[in-house]
Each structure stands twice: as structure tokens, then as C-alpha cells.
Amino acid sequence: MEKFKGKMYPFWFDNCRLVWFPDPSWRNPLYHVYRSESPEGEFTRLTAIPIAATVYNDFTTQQASKYAHDVYCIEVIENGRVIGRSELIKNEKQLGTWHQLRATEINRREWLMLSRFMGVDCLLMKHVKYGKYQFRCSECWDSVNSIIRKDYCTTCYGTSYEKGFYSGIATKFQFVEPNKSDVITEEGRMEDASTTAWTIGYPELDIGDLILRLCDFRVFRIVSVQNTSILTTNVRQMVSVTHLPFTSVEYELFKREGVLVE
Image (cartoon, rainbow, N blue to C red; front, top):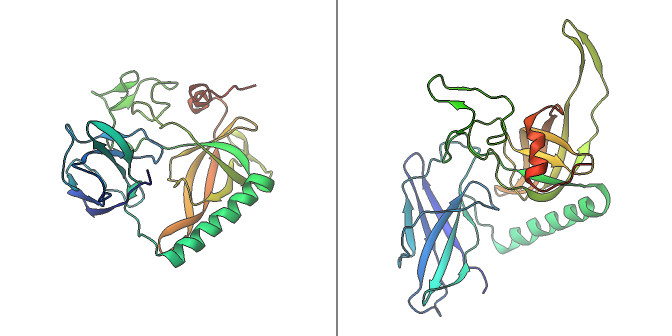
């Protein structure tokens, strides 16, 4: 089944209204509404029972940040059987055909460069957004003093929120090799751990996300994002990243994602 589409109308700090457009050939369809912070899931079902309306207001949304946006998905049910899901619905301008064709071509060409010449295999780990919907870590979080009691926690991976990061999204990045520098300070010798990288417009990158580079098993944290876009739709993303020390708990994410570290 070809995926049907919908639109999102956010009322900031209050609610989010979803409207979708079903196939007229469906007979008495019902719907479930799902929400996630990551386009690859995990998705949380918002409807307790299937609904018949093609409009839904999410009063539990917490879209307070201008950098982070929820994504929604509508599941359609007919005669008690799930027959498909909608395209992802998010707060983004819908491109017309002329612009969409060009945005697709830009991403196609840049992905060709990444996949054949420049890019290295990576996993993008979307950050659980600071308690937006998730619970505090049951292993290391001290709710009385509001501090983390355990530095090396494999339940939250240093974020203080359960899971810490959503499941990895396979993609490719081209990294700019950092300048080699060695600065002597009162604490000892310091090496620059910052560099830049770029990828195509999907998946959307946010500050605080991690990049797991699979060729040499290194972890980078995104500290800033600069997008190239067509009518607010991303077609290329340039990020500044910081290489995490090898003693960081985030390196345990390789094991969680089933990556064999040599």
C-alpha cells in the first residue's frame, strides 16, 4: 500500500493537531496515532483504542525546543487488521513538485559521493531529549539531591534518563581530519578533540546526538549543526563534533547495538 500523508499544526506549549488524508477506497477504517523523537522509532502509541476520526490533538506533546521536533505516524486498521502506516508527519514545510525533485536529486548525488568515495559507515544515536517523555534512570539518578550517583552507567549512558539514546540509524558521514595540535597547560598536554563532518538531509541531526564511527570504533558528540535547506527542508547537514575519550560510557553503545569491537 502506498503510504498516505498528513499534516501537523503545532500550538506551541499547548498541543499539536494532526490531520491526515486516507485512501477513499478504504471501508470504515480506524486509526492509531504514534509519536517518537526519532524518525526510526521507538514509537509510543497515543491512542488507547482505535479512532475513526482523521483528526487528532496531542495534548501531551512537549515541543518547547526550537531545535527538536516530534514525529508522528498514523496506523490504519480495516476489519481488525493493520493494513499500513502513513508517512512520517512532522513540523516541516511540504515541498511542491518542482522543489521536491531538486531536493531529492541533491540528496541522491551527495549520497552517491558518500557511498562510493568519501563517506564512512556510522550509526547515528538520537539523544533522548532531557526528560521530555522518558523517565529518570533508576540505576544512577538520585532524586533527592538531583545528581548522578554513578559515572559509568549502562542504563542511561551518562544522560540520567532511561535508555539514553534511541536505536542507531545506519548512515554515512565524511569527516574532516582534525588539525594535530598539542598544547601544554597546567594540567598537562591537551589535544584538540574537535572536528567537522557532513551528511545528507536525513536523518535529521540534533545537538547532543552521538555518531558511532564503525571503521575505527570512535564516538563523536554533535555540538552544533549547520543545515543547507530548500524552503526549510534539509538537503545537507554540516556538524561540529567532539571526539569522546575512550573511557567514556558512551562506548558501551557499540555492544548495545550489536557492533563487534575488535
